[in-house]
Length: 215
Image (cartoon, rainbow, N blue to C red; front, side):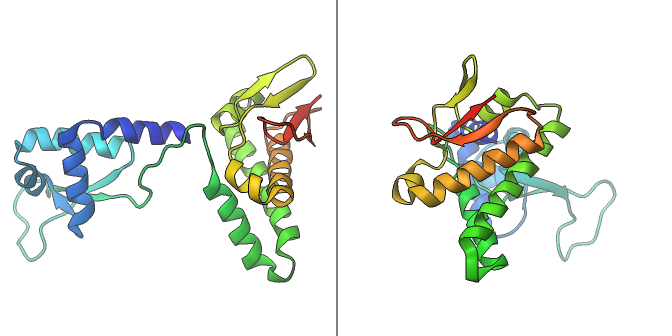
C-alpha cells in the first residue's frame, strides 16, 4: 500500500542511509556490512543499523551467507544485503497505474481477440481479491478500504463519494475504458469485503472519481 512507499521515502531522507542504499543497489552482488561500511566511510555498527532499517521498510532484503571461495569459519556466516526489485514511488494524490497495467496485460494474455471484455472480468476479479485480502486482515470497513486504495472516500447519508481517481491520467485519455475498469474493480471489491447492500454506479462528476457507491 501507499503507506509502505511513504516509509521507504522517509527512510531515504537520511543522506548516509541513502548513500548505503545506492551502493547496495548498484553493487550487482550481495553486500556485507563490512563492504557497505567501507564504501560509505562509516563504522560497521552504524552501517548495520542503516542497512537493517532499509530491510525493515522493504527496500533491501538480507540473509546470512559465507563469502564465496573462502572456507567457512566458526560461528555464523556474515549477513549480506541486496536491493529488492520494487523500489519506491509516491504520488500525491495517490495513483495506481500499475494496477491498471497489470489488469490490461492479463487481459491481453488471456484473450487477445477480445481484450476489453477480458479486462473488465480481470478488473472485477482483482477487486474481489483485494476485498477478500482486506477481509482476511480484518480491515473490511468499506471507507477504510477505499482510503487505503487512494480513493479519498467521503460517506454521506446514502452514498460514498470518491474524491480521488487513482487512474486519473489514463481516465482523461481513455475515459470509457478506464472508467469501466474502475467500476468493475470497485464492484469486485464490494463483493470481496463484502459490503452487503452497497452498489457501485458510474456517476461522472468534475473533480471526483467516476464511480459513486450507493446503498
